[in-house]
Amino acid sequence: MASSFSSSMRGSRGGRKLKSEINVVPYIDVMLCLLIIFMVMPTSNNPSSIDLPHADKASRAPDAYIMVQVKPNSSLSIGIAGKSAEAPETEPNRDALVRKLRALHEHYPEYPVMIAGDKESKYDDVIQLISEAKKMGINRVGLAAK
Image (cartoon, rainbow, N blue to C red; front, side, top):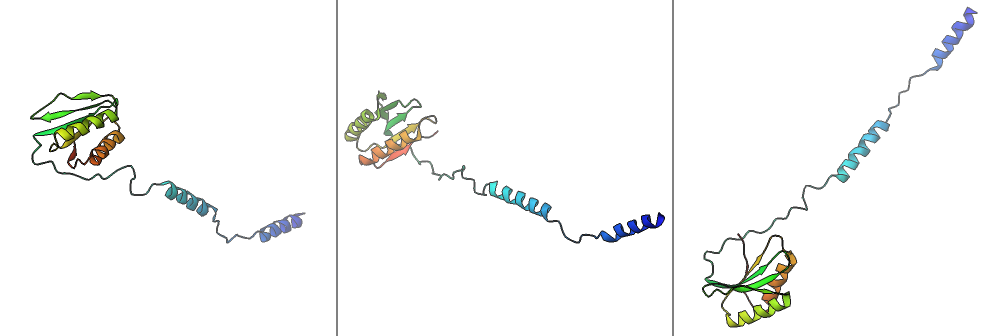
């Protein structure tokens, strides 16, 4: 009996061989994780930040100008500011404001136009007013800032 026991032990030891292969599954997992990280990670250029141009302040503010104000609730007002100041009139819509702007520009052709948009007002409203003023032939259109 002892001989059969020792022969079975020898057979089992002799039948086992060491594996000399490299297990690449963990490396593949790591590479897939790195690939996902680099695909999800944003580029170095941040698209949410905008590099706006800088403008110098005017050396001297105009003595008199046509002031257009755009309020956050889309109400519009127009008037003369400076020497011959007129109280600003509130206009019901943009068409009425453009008609008033045309009349003021015909009466005071040398006056520049200053557009003051509240920080809560729509950007499109201000741009549309600048465009309308340029279409009328007003070359001096500015934006009011603090």
